[in-house]
Image (cartoon, rainbow, N blue to C red; front, top):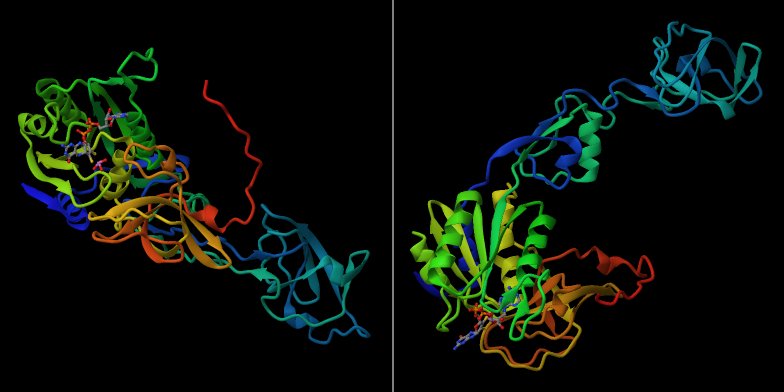
Length: 425
Ligand SMILES: Nc1nc2c(c(=O)[nH]1)N[C@H]1C(S)=C(S)[C@@H](COP(=O)(O)OP(=O)(O)OC[C@H]3O[C@@H](n4cnc5c(N)ncnc54)[C@H](O)[C@@H]3O)O[C@H]1N2
Ligand code: MOO
């Protein structure tokens, strides 16, 4: 068992020991947010035929070579067609077919002219300028060529990709299966939020927060509930989790107290401890074990510490399980926009929010940084990484951080809506 290792070593040790879960085919809408388990090749072009970019007339460009404002060329209208229909007639020299936007190019034609640029009189149109072949034609394959790879294995299925897949007539999408993450919270003090609060007890916040995080990641959380601080009960619960899930995550019981039973329970369940303690604050007592190639990760009981370590250690594992090639959080460099005066002998992760001001990426603390303080997880999208042995961090100092949430808000100037305050009920 390794002890007190660096975060990067912990991340890599765990990432190296897992492979993506299975693959499956899902309906198009269900694929949104999932990861492709194979590359997608276009079996058809988009558009599948050349078509008109505007409402107008299909013609042969060379027929208009002599056209001038003072000497228009006249063409005879022989048919009308529109999107969804194929013209029956062929355009031959001296003729034209009226079209609506999106109509397939009629046989014989090679350009379109818009209504506003012609004068129609009976079945004749007058054209006052010369056109070139392909003018106003959206060519077949303009968007996607048949045979083109439109998305690679490991790509995230985003809404534009859903649209492209639909455009190619793909209704079932090959994706990685959802990772199943079983989560339990240990602690004799814990109550479910549905229960009445009792003296000395607290509500179990971590279980719900971590399960919600799993759902947000597109994984499937399995609720293993609250477990008392007893080795045997915890062992049984770990084993139950291992039967059903790809990873088992627990909170609490990882420190050195008399009731910190997690390591013993992991061993009791037949797992081998990989490491205990990571050189970071919060969340240092995290413990990881493996049984039959499945990981069990014991996070610290302090709610914010549990969430921070979940983001830095467990989420990359979930991403890898679901086929994402680069699962570690992206890094960002920014200007610290606060004062954090506490010197730190340990490497410390501060909950912060990215705000772009006058083109500068500022990292502003989201609130108090105590290991149990959950409020500052709200709005936190970056964990500022303060190296071990640092003195106070002051405003204006350059810092680096790990992106753990949605940072698009940072680029919006105004809030999208007026926020109303909701009191707890
Ligand atoms: N002698 C030492 N004591 C402690 C050390 C140490 O190094 N030496 N480390 C401290 C640090 S740092 C942490 S973190 C904790 C880790 O302890 P545990 O993982 O065993 O966590 P617990 O003691 O079970 O809980 C800590 C704290 O969080 C509350 N808690 C626990 N679970 C939940 C939950 N699901 N929802 C909400 N709140 C929860 C719990 O009541 C405690 O207050 O050890 C320190 N001690
Ligand atoms: O390591 Mo504890 O999780 O710092 O709060």
